[in-house]
Image (cartoon, rainbow, N blue to C red; front, side):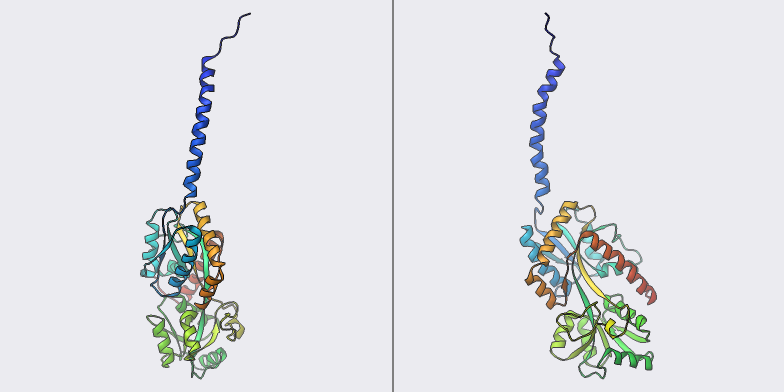
Length: 334
């Protein structure tokens, strides 16, 4: 009987199988390693505000705690100016690999309506990672003010249209827009006076230059403790834990008036999802630490993590909301 001849092509294919398998086994660890090595170097967190403020201290507090989880330091790079444009452009010009992050805030949402030609799209060009915290505003008067409650302020404003003066920081800031929103919701005619910074607002309040101040809690808390000013209301949905005796604006009869500012982490769009998730987990772990939560609380900040989807939804809501406020206040984009 004649034996069948072996097919040389089959022999070549069979011989190639072990070689292909070896190549696959050799390549798999490299692919896994490429995804597992993040972060490869220190992470830079760009903050669009100067040193010493709420955003800066929040970034440093959370960044230090994140570093322990990530195995690399988190370096804070303060780039104030141009309503956050300088900081955002610095992040967007970096590789989308997770090593350069942006501290976003509700100012990011407001900038859409205050800058005619933003050099980027805050929705399309940024990848949200997680909220870090929310912080409300306080409505404050001088310690010796004749106004003892927010109702006293409203009664005076309604009896004397255009006479009540409200101090805030710069036009277009959360404080300024919150004061404009308050006027609208309360149905009062008042004059909003913008100042260069929080110290100037507080000084004007203490000297009687203005009747009422809208300011985030961080610079107000020491003054309240020293009894140089009094808080009449807070703008959050609930009373603030360090000021349990101070009612919310809603509690005092102004329906649908709640203002919470916020800070969050974002990366350039196109950053790998696995890297985004790694950073999000590190932020969540940091914000769960009692020492971090306590330090943020002392700043007037409520520690709060989120998913990327939740932060994206918050940004979209804020863009819509503050757009309506800017339009109602007749503030022109520049």
